[in-house]
Image 1 (cartoon, one colour):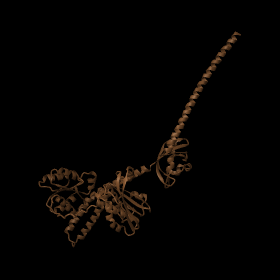
Image 2: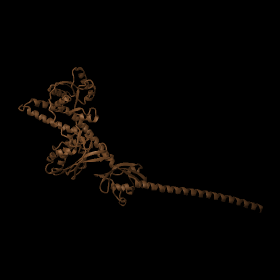
Image 3: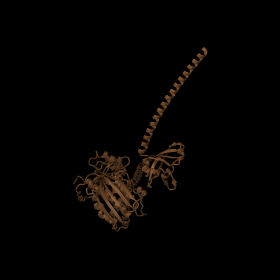
Image 4: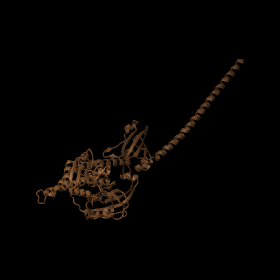
Length: 548
């Protein structure tokens, strides 16, 4: 009996110990479960907060964010996407990606599904079609989120592509301008020789001379070539200009009679000129050429019937507007608009309208230089030009030139200058690297009684001047020459020859004067090709300055 009782007590103690251990383990598990549930609740709350934040980001994003299923159907589309495409949320729920990707002819642009399903991030540039039929260039980035869900992010490239097109157009026009300017410079030297010798021959020949008519025709042809070269120089912004304060209203008013005759009776010519228009700084002759070219272009576009309106006003451009218009800087501008009711232009024609030799007219009806000249003149005057047009609607050319100052009283007309003798006995140092031009110019000047010293470049001219003991009254030098150009020669020579006056001539002068500024803007400058009488008259006027 004693042993049995002792055994029972022993087993009872073991049972209590086991029960206590089980209770402790259970309490530990309960604590762990409570901790897990607490952490799970925190995760759920964090997920909810993250979902809300993500939803807000998606809803407020400026880029298009959407999810699609494995066949391209839209599962979700944020407000930016609905706004871009023009659909309601209900309409978008029945659309697929294929419905909004633009087809180019027979070729259908598609999302690169093979790479996408392989886990790669796919980035493509393509066009989307909006509900109203308009197309928009976008960059689409797509990535697989799960087995049956893909996310796409779409960014509108319209503005970027516009700026890229503007840059490419600007670079193309600049390259063409450089080519045209270089060609014009070389041709100017040749035409200087042709026109110069023709003029000299005609002075010595009589009407009844057997070769007189032939020389006259040669001179006419050379003048036409000179005109063409000047147009190329205007386009390339390398034409020699004589800028001054210009009132656009007065230029237009002075041209109205000529413009009315030019457009014909079938075209109604109207003007809407701002009464208090400010002044711009430009070459008046080039402004007249600009207006004339635009009016002729408008007349041809209207085929002799319609309405042509010339308007002027002042505008203020902020930085964004200046960038969009291609202006060099924000600020105040004087604007000239030439508006016609003609046939208009499509987008492809508008993009090429300022290219030299581009024309939609029949062969022989135009050179294709009229609007490129406009482009060059405006650019050389620090302005900008843009065109708005559509087929069968008409065309508007907008010319903007920097505002300089308010208009004052009507400027007085220049009194006629006293006619001066073209002859002289002074000594002239002629510096020209083109031998043919140098020989011609020397001959022309010597015929007027002057003593002429010649040199082929600036270095040679320094030696000639150093070896000549008498006075040198005038230095007549080309601007751009090998070894040493005209401006550098002047710097070396004028401190030694203080009595010497300076005259430049060049077929490429505006580039050096107005852009590189290596020549004093107030310097006397003669453009090639020059007329013999004009050159000798200019020489005489310069030599006589201060001697009256």
